[in-house]
Amino acid sequence: MASVDIVIPVYNEEHVLADSIARVLAFLSVHPEHQWRIVVANNASTDRTLDVARRLEAEHPGQVAALHIPVKGRGIALRVAWLTSPADVCAYMDVDLSTDLAHLPALIDPLANNEADVSYGTRLHRLSQTHRGFKREFISRTYVTILNVLGGLHVSDAQCGFKAIRRDAAHALVPLVKDTRWFFDSELLLIAQQNGYRLREVPVRWEEDTDTRVHIISTATEDLRGLWRLRVGGIPKVQREATSGPR
Image 1 (tube, rainbow, N blue to C red):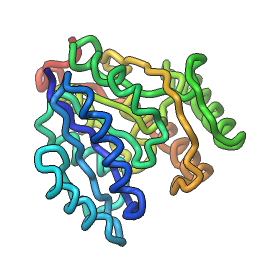
Image 2 (image 1 turned 90 degrees about the horizontal axis):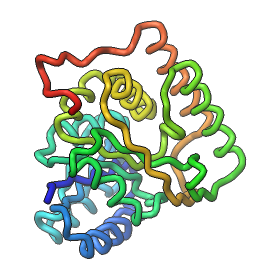
Image 3 (image 1 turned 180 degrees about the vertical axis):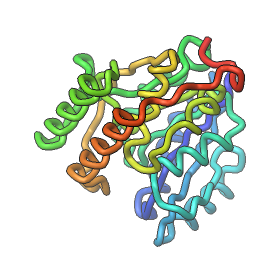
């Protein structure tokens, strides 16, 4: 049995947080194969999100933890949550739960069994079932094509909010990721692949959240800037003497 922290980064999500946590807890209650904990990473919210997270922590001791991060940026939230976690495996998912929770075992089990180091959901695999608008679909496919061609990243989807990483891999790779916002995911996968870490792709069922806070065009532009930075500066290498590295 592995210990698993599921990080849910949140920014001004007081209206949906309690319901989403209840849904995740209900799913985990029928999957006792791991020791689960949900970490609500409050990412500089200006509403009552932190209050809701702390109430949930009090109502579900040992199952839910509230983590306050005063600086905005999903990359920052994941960096802090993953690097301070004592769990064997750390994951994250978006609070809207667009990805079907039924895929969580496929995301976690290969890492818990030491068959992979990083796993990631994909909405663009031929076996995935994705329901979203044309614009988001087009931009996602264009972006991942650019990542494949210019970045050499061998994945079908880099930006799905559904990923997991082994603790040893997190401590080796996450400090090398410079982005603090939306390019964090792509940069992590690029660094992991370049350093020989084992990646596992998980096709998912995914439903678009019409209330999403993500601005697609600006996010894609930001991602392209991050890719150019890595093209110019190079992808950093893991210092093997400082970590056990991939196995």
